[in-house]
Length: 86
Length: 402
Image (cartoon, rainbow over all chains, first blue to last red; front, top):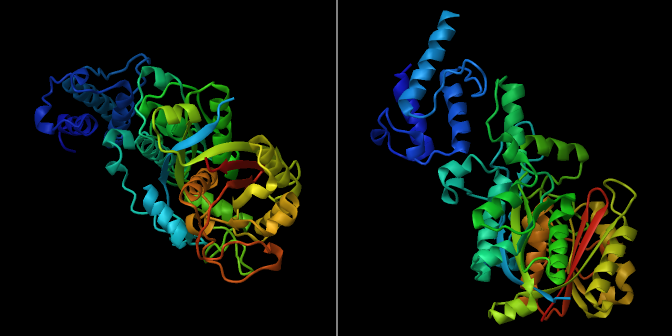
């Protein structure tokens, strides 16, 4: 599997219509016109791409922080690590 | 009570999505029916439909919006945009609040439903797309139009199967008459040519395997269609004050329920709705020159509709002309009545009666003047547009020249 950060950047690029080259890890989603509805789709795409379950944000133990692209990648890595350990 | 006129028309249809192409196809009897292209046909016994052809969502919506709108809602929005442009309307804050959006739809987001169930049942997917519900809801068309155009007045969907679009226009007429809305976008949208829906229609044995030939002795059933049509309605005073082009006056609306059979049409219920529309419009039977028939091309509908028209008009039934647009458009279900009301309004404006295309042989059970295959240049003082839906729900519009 390609680098998690690259994959996440690709998904965010698709939803924000901002080129991959202009999306460094510190990019905040609220800076690139990502709205709440987009977030639902982004989570859905992440789950499909990585074959993981992203817990609801209200669920305790959520590992996805959705402020920056880097944080999402970090959260996905942590979910992937847990599922490997399990 | 305000007089109500039609000042804008927008369509998405199997024969084109601008008014001129649409109208030319109807007048020339060029059918939009053809082999199915949008779904796999290997398990279908009926392999034709009147599809909206070469439709590319991304040409009409930004990529993010495409995943939020079912095909039927996309059609609704495009038709609404076209209708507003045609009417030359510009919405300021006040008008946006006073504009109603009433959209008829038979079944809602069938593509979304079909795709979702395929994922769940056939592919054993664990999850569905997050917009599954907002895409498939039957009011999605009305809601997406209001969001796209910023219209904030009374907005809702109407469902009465094949009469949905007609009911929507009739309700909008009442709202403009009463002053509840200043302008209304009213019509219908449907896109339910999916594998699942077609299997359902196959089971009903109402579909033709070759084409749709309304009122012809050789007719063999209906052909499913899809699309959308939206009319812009406003009061005569408002339209003339702003110098708007007027297609026709929407003069009356009648509706009824057969209270009899869920699929078999009934001449009594249909006649009641036509009479109600004429009474509402204050039109004498003998000033009706043209009827745009429901004319589905099934044995039963066309014969029953003939009896219905004879019951209402008596001797005048032999002097008026009747045609069905479904040979060209297929049966657009919730969109059908709106597509046909649009055709009727243009016919009045241009003084041309569109023909019944695909006509082969007269049937003694359909012994009306059905304008076989060739359009007529003829003034239309008043016209009636019939929709007789499954569920025994009838809706009839009466239109007239100004």
